[in-house]
Image 1 (tube, rainbow, N blue to C red):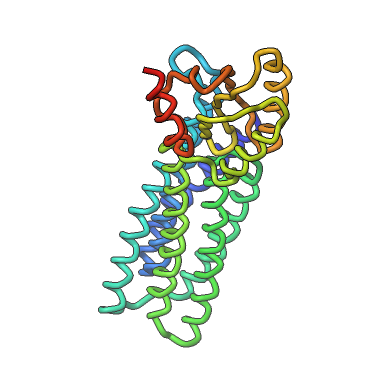
Image 2: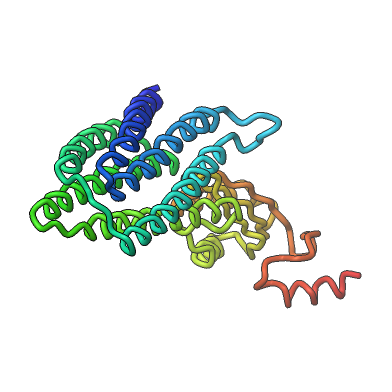
Length: 298
């Protein structure tokens, strides 16, 4: 399992470095380095979490989790991101305190540290580069952020050495934290959309319905439900009204159409006419017409 080994290497790199860095940050007295340490620590935790959950998310579907374990991967991304959110807020508060009462910083120590930071995090970013799950993307994003964070600190520490403006330290720190904050909020939203069964962003359900209605033999479609488990796998269920003799061909065509729209798993219910649908709340668009049907049903 290549990605798992890579993630593990990245974890060991990150955790050992962030401990080293916390201690160094206190000695050098740089809030930007300490904030990077918090950030790295959050990343290390999230890497470990994603490793455990990624492994679990690979399990095949069973009776308990009929859709498989992919959501565990999303859960990993969510928890990680919340850790980062809290971390970045904490960093911003500390930096603001620093701006109010500035302190002396050891610039040379900071420059040396930033060089190490850039190299080590770059190595970790290279290691975690492959992977397409939301979780792995999250891990890789953290790694890239770390590299960027360190490059910023490196440039800042060199400027400070020559200008002695220690305010730069706090400003860099706030910049790094805001960057993490904005990305974290995006990630949380993405994970929550999955948990709330929101229609995946890359699909327009209206568009899909119109395409399906054009298939010959289909009189009407309703009850289209679209959701995704992990952001990659998209699942749909749909009711289709057509003649029974056409059912097999229609099903095949519907599957093909769905596939084109990126839906990889479809469950199709075939009905002869509208009266067959025992589900009272048909899709919104049919709400009015179906009420009339149900009236002269009873």
